Amino acid sequence: MIGKEFTHLDWDDIRHFLALAQAGTFLGAARQIGVEHATISRRVAALEKNLGRKLVDRRGRRIVLTAEGEEVARHAAHIAQQTAAIEQLGRTSTTDMRGHVRISAPPALSSVLLAKPVAALRQQHPGIEITLTGEKRFASLNRREADIAVRLSRPEDGDYAITKLAEITFHLYASKAYLESVPEAQWTFIGYDEGMNASPQQLRLFEIAAGRPIAIRSSVLEFQSAAARLGGGVVMLPDFAVSDGGGLERIEDEDPLRREVWLVVHAEIRDVPAVRVVMEALKGAF
Image 1 (cartoon, rainbow, N blue to C red):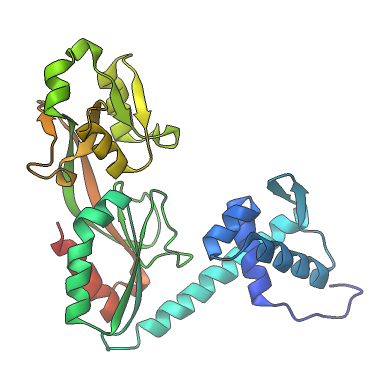
Image 2 (cartoon, rainbow, N blue to C red):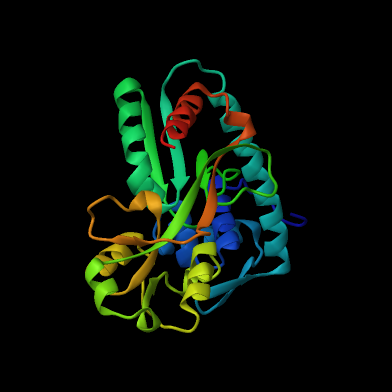
């Protein structure tokens, strides 16, 4: 800085500031990094002090970056990408089946389809550790939030190796007692909360409901299924999540909703032995 003695910056301060710039809130940044929100505030304050610049305008729960904050965020994002590339380069130098692999996948897929291959993989390769995060949002592979992602939509851009795993279908389900006692014109429905209104399955549910109420909403698919089994209404579920004899009857549809499942990995680490063997295990799940 002109007129100032040069100060060595702490990369951890920059990393916490970048998370805040990306998340827009202290709470969101804390969740992204896995720390308390007070830690984000303290780290950002330390960076501002070291730079002698105000980077953030605090306006209630949300924050607004100053012009200098925007500039620092741009540089920090570039540094983060280069750091991730160096880490990935180091990982490609080993031939050992060892390491920690992070997987991001939708919660329903994680609980129903991925537990078995992950457990089998651990038995075969005890040197590999797995962290699986069931989340609806798209974890950033560039920022190393995940090494491998299982997604229900194909990424439009990015330096990724992408493989189509499968195509899954969705049908309406309800309990036998509900279907026998409630006329179709009086059906009520069970769906996701408002945060999923733009998802293909929720849009199809709106279309089918045609003005009939979506009376029960939840972000948890297992809750939706349980509510339907107890006579709470008609629910749209992926067929893989419904077991025979589970208390739900399928309502047949000549044109069921179909969604593609994609396996995504950053191109720079797809040949890392531990990553490659995890990818093969996930492919086998489908």
